[in-house]
Image 1 (cartoon, rainbow, N blue to C red):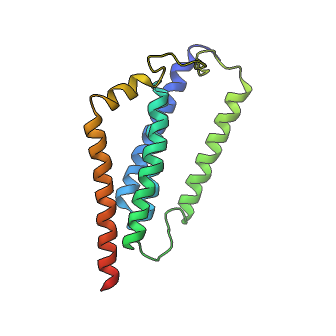
Image 2: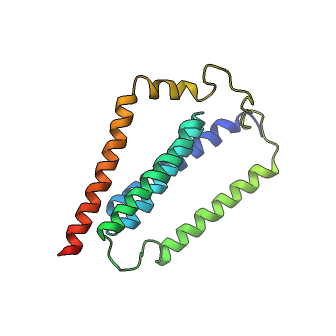
Amino acid sequence: MSNDFLPLLYSFHFYLFGLIAIAASIAFVTRKSPVAAALWLVVVMFCLAALYVMMDAQFVGVMQVLVYAGAIMVVFVFVVMLLNLGEAAPLADVRSKWGRLLAGFLGLALVAEIMALTRSPLDPRLVVPQLPVTVNSTGGIIGGVAGPLFREYLLAFELTSVLLLVAITGAVVLGRKRSAN
């Protein structure tokens, strides 16, 4: 792969993930079913994680997937299911002919891209650098994020967890009132 091709490849992926994130966010706000909207929000979170990884912020990208696309979205779907906000109608997001064609085209494009990347020798700049095996006493790789999080921003971090706990408790109380009526 030539060195002139790398900026083009980077730009292509930046715009690809950006456009998918924009399209998924539009789909998120236009869905009638809260569960379908939550699934579109997960797509947005994955695209943002890919953009973080492209900006050489792998830790932030992994945390984006684990915390937001994983834990927070599970809480959202749990609250939606608890409050029974979703309709019993089947999800019809991709059941149309155009949705299937678009999904097939995107799948073929991703397979073609993977095939092209595996057939050509990788540039050393594309390979993710190996992380050090030993962690030093200053906190290692994650110490730069964990240190300020648990020192300067500890109050905000704990208040966020209490806010999530209150929101879940409120959803349970609302769910009980609705089922009692």
